[in-house]
Figure 1 (cartoon, rainbow, N blue to C red):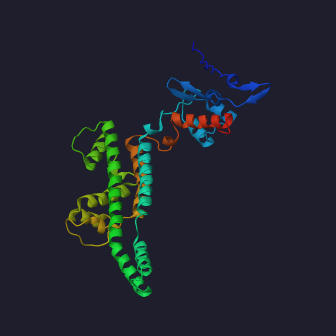
Figure 2 (tube, rainbow, N blue to C red):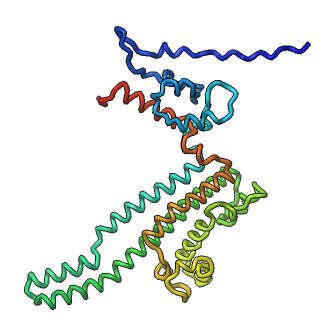
Figure 3 (cartoon, rainbow, N blue to C red):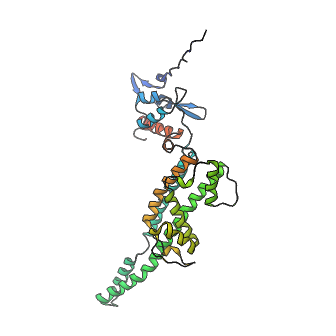
Length: 319
């Protein structure tokens, strides 16, 4: 005779014991368990049904829906990771975000440098104030001084752009190397091509060249290589693959390539934005991550929101 399957009884947690009440008046709870967040060793587990019932946790309903849709064998939802940075996706996203903030600071600092217009006006006013020239002559001499300043100003600007592009490339390359080392890459001599080959070896059917955003990634590092090495060979590669980035069709070995490239604020900001597509795709294919879940599926995401909710409800004045 077959035994009848018996459904395991799910113990209902008594949440009333976390409620605060005095003289019949209920007060917001300062216990995370009241909001459906429970300790599970060093991690947490979530009672999503409870979180939805009280409706004041601060966790978006869209996140609760996504969490509910993930199959599980228990009443509680266990976030996949403990910390945000445990997702490689977030490490690349944070690196790009930090670089964007640094670039904004560099631009702000550069804005303090005297522009050709500043120099032109300063010379004009000085000549007039000391009586060294009449209005027409002072204006003419001021314009000449501004033109002279233009070369220096443009050189400084291009040097800053060139150096920052290299800074971006170094930051992203070093992070890629650290992540490949974590997977098992152990060669001492490192190139970007070797890292790609290593990833291909781990996932035979997958190729870096097929990732979303690869064209942006490939073009960016081609520009970086030309800025770094200043060679005719690399210039020809840019000319072949990214002709829209060039200011001229001719180049000779050793010439500062920053004067031949269309690099500037727009290029840098667009690169920092568009490169994320490639690195997100990299993390999906080669690190087997879900880039959507990387935004919320970890302990700290929930505890941070719940702690803020508790603070807002129990101490609304922030005293």
